Image 1 (cartoon, each protein chain N blue to C red):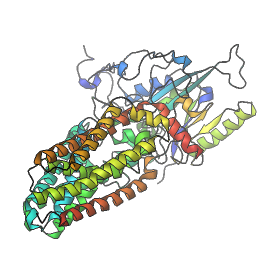
Image 2: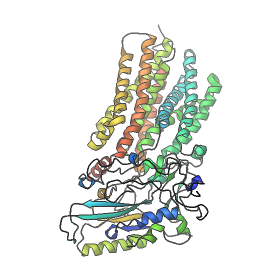
Image 3: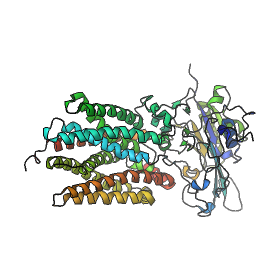
Amino acid sequence: MTTPATGFFTDTSVCIGCKACEVACKQWNQLPADGDFFSGRSYDNTIHLEATTWRHVAFVERQERLSGQSTARPFSWLLMSDVCKHCERAGCLEACPTGAIVRTEFDTVYVQPDVCNGCGYCVVCCPFGVINRREDDGRAWKCTLCYDRQKGGIEPACAKACPTDSITFGKLDDLKEMARNRLQELHRRGVTEAWLYGMSERDQPGTEGLHAFFLLLDRPEAYNLPPDPSVPTKGVMGSWGVMALAAAGMAAAALAAAHSRGGDRK
Amino acid sequence: MILAQSRLHVGREMSPELALQTGEGAGQRVKHPEPDAGGIVPLWREVPSRYTAPGYYGLALLKEPVWIWSVPSYFYIGGVAGGSAMLAAALHGKKRLRRLASWCRLLAFAGTTVGPALLTYDLGKMSRFLNMLRVFRPSSPMSIGSWSLAGTGMMATLFLLQGDRSGAVTRYGTAVGGLLVAGYTGVLLGNTANPLWRERRLLLPLLFMSSAAASTAGVLQMMPLDKREEKVVQRFGLVGKAGEAASMVAMQRNDSTVPEVAAAAREGKGGMLWTAAKAALVSGILVELLPVRSPLKRKVSGALTTLGAICLRFALLEAGKAAAREPQATIALERGRMRR
């Protein structure tokens, strides 16, 4: 039996920054609070995705207009609900030495909390800076794409709560179709800045496509997304090759030193 | 107060009597319900909406490595273990170097015993350290490293017990395992999303391997040695030290192709440790090349090499943290890659 791959399409052009997704995620997954503080960065006091924060709404205040908008001063809001991308080639999964991080039947990337031993390697291997180890818990945590809800046949909490359907959950193929149509419509309406981030392998060869992809209205770095993320293992054979050469060098040095006759005579 | 009754519910404002604790994150333990937010974000260094550089208010794009002091310490000790395992195997059967060979075997054994303990100490769940050997995942250098370390530990133990009477399997096993243990850490750091480590991924294995030889020689130089032993250690060490110095120079040149990455490597603690590592390494080589023969000279040179090798491992971790904190390093690196 094969289950079709599922994912998120996040259309930032209709995000209103209500943070309902953040709240729904915290509540459904029973995640601990992060403490109260004001970041001073627009309305974004969540700051980033974390072990305890699996949805994060970014607030970008831009001193320029968006096509099709008329404002007194050149200004526009860019809002985006960020989430784990559930990459086709996932850095965290390929790095995990314990097999705690697995790909589920929905083709999503899932950390099994009863296996993770908190080695912290996934943290440095995620090119999006999503997964993190919680200090007092000791294990790595990230979005599960509501594995428990999906198993029950219902959509993830954030998508359910999103009042504008900026977050859409569905079968990956349907989502891609929907994203292409939405992009076409926006372009037709004159919003030429709109583009799709990481939808397919062609868009993002480094990750071979994301299972949670985005429609963005500016360059990725405006939203704190990497412009060309790549799974670290894509270059690892070169490193192993260099290591093999260096190992041969060390072996030769050891043998040469051991067999040197120079020290034999006084 | 119902809320404070169980540790599981701290920071969640949920009554354990009313709410079922079955959520995916319900098992996440909380000791500090209000983490120190000041540590995450420097507040109001500039008016955030005036932030003009490409990026998101200068906030970190990647996560910093969470590893503590025990990991770079292991990098050093694993290097010594690997280097001495190789040297022990190479010295086998040399009658006049029996004492040196037995020290090497002891170092290999001690390093592969202390090393896993240090790594376990860094784990978030220490009791689950055996999960490292739960699967073999060839895509993960850490998985390959864990298996190598475990295997080399066994081999080095056998080698220590069998001593001069050890068979070829033990010797070759220890040598090959030692080489893996000495070098895989370089591959491990290079195989990450960290802009600094990733940029250096072809040089890191070379650095770790040569520094392993240098570190081994550094430790041995601090021990009492006769002339013949000294010669062997010196030859092995000089190759390592030269390789280490060359890799460090190559890394600096490599960094400079992306100025933002180079800046992160120079900044703060990481930069200071890197400079210290360079200074100690160079002075270690200079002392060694002095045209005098004395045990003191040898020991000073060994101590300087050791100091340099330890600083180097900590420098790599600290610089990696700085590079992860600086979003421009990632952005500039990837934009550069896209233009290529």
